[in-house]
Image (cartoon, rainbow, N blue to C red):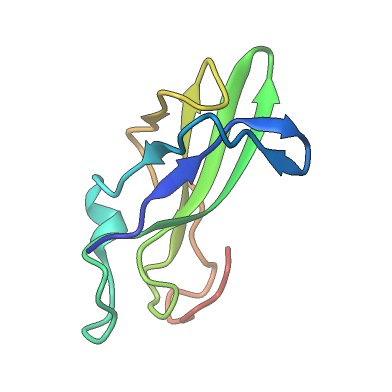
Length: 107
C-alpha cells in the first residue's frame, strides 16, 4: 500500500460536509517519496499536509518518504481550489534536513 492525502469539504471550520465525499488530493508519484526503510510497509508516502492560499493559488505542503529514514523531505503542490486538482512541483523535494544522517527529523 501507500499513504495518500485526502481532503473533504467543510460546513464550518470544525465540521465536515457529510454529503460531500472525501477527495484524493495527492498520491506518491515522485521518486523521492518512495525512499523508506525495509521494515516500513507503505510503497510510497505523502503525509502531514498543510494548505496555504496566496493570490488565489493553494499551496499544499506535505512530507514524503519514510519519517524513520534520512530520506524524509518536504514537497509542495499547487491548485486553484482547496480540493484540487493539485500539481506537484517538479523539483520536489524543496526542504531537506540539514544533517543528512538525521532520521525521523521533521524538516
